[in-house]
Amino acid sequence: MIELLILYVLLKRDLTMYAVQKHIIDIFAPFTSPSFGALKPALTRLEEKNCITSRKMMSEGGKLSVYYSLTNSGKSELKRLLTEDMSANPAQFLSHARIKLCCADVLSVEEKERLFFNTKSLAVKIKAGANSILSDEYKHTNFYQKVILDNTICELSNFITIIEGLEKDNAGNS
Picture 1 (cartoon, rainbow, N blue to C red):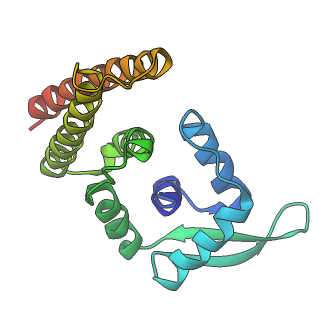
Picture 2: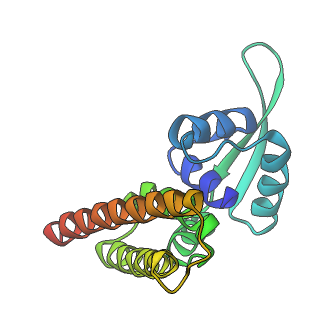
């Protein structure tokens, strides 16, 4: 997911590693907050895959800074990362789905349609799994588990409603 975030913020302009981290936090703080320890290896991987390039420049203060730029290959990789299948692991799903939906503006109408459909389908599947645990067949669920599961079901229901709104908006823009 870190590569997707980096590519997305570099889409707007060239940035230093510090500025990449700041832009990611500015845009995605409710969902993630990457450390420099996670950014540096991800920037290296992206540069090795020719998704980004780097150049050294002197800043106004006389300090040598490395600026990262997105390549055409990086733009393609960003779209690939946005449209690839998400993990069905419920612990990762909502955070990854939220990030991908926040970046959907870079996709074509058709690509957004596919992203929205796949995301909603997986949300419905995860919600059904949570509902089945609350059913009478699972008598071993304690009070605390039931409260948390009920909250999860509500959260997924709201998320599905949001996706349906995005689908409607996307259909209106086609």
